[in-house]
Length: 338
Image (cartoon, rainbow, N blue to C red):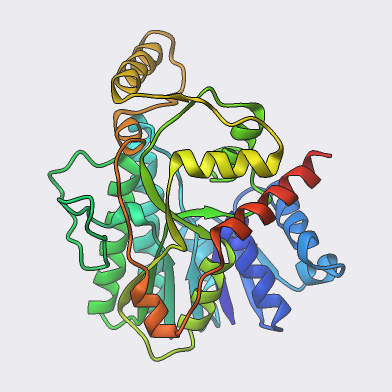
């Protein structure tokens, strides 16, 4: 039996599709009923038999801080894919991030140990990896995390979650961690998902930034997970990125595929510094949700380049072209728009 947490998210839904398509016996955790419709919709992208594939999953309603419900979900489980997470860069959401991402992961680790799970695969993020002092140097899995840096609340929570995984390995749990870059995939066009970028670009953006980060196709997240789990590889982490690309180039490529104009104005670091302060003031005065934090503003201009050679060597793996990934995701977006 395979257990997937966060089964209604971008990674979880695509992972579930692969698992059930391969004939695996799968149990998945979900929290909200309406999110199941999105999973069915994702399945329909790739199969005419999406309904029966979806119905082959044993769904368990629970959250990762509900120990009694989790104990039922872990019964007879051999392998766990821990995809559940809360994504937010709003500083005032740190308590929620800590509760779900750190404490929730601790619960998954503890239950995996109690139920003698054979192996756990944890979906982390490149946000939980350190940065090189020189932006020209590639960031690897060995790049140290700097706790003194002004890290985002999301990054802190994912790093804390990784510490729980490593703690589990010290107590006898076999585990692997993947650190994806910005994940490109269809079906989740709202909220904190990277799919919201496509919606924002389609609506029209007035400014761009020239920061650089790593991007990866959704299948280049799922497929390495599926290869790592049955392998002899354990207690290691892997960066998953297809390419390092500037935000400007990414926006331009997406805009081209969506047949809209790309922004022509550059958002300077000064402009962003003013913007995040106004955003903070709006939050304090009117209680509006934060749209732009100081850390996000800095990230928009920072150059962070990642090295994917470890996973390519370990699995003899080749990543999908980012151009093709953008094109495919845009096709699904335009299809859903209709």
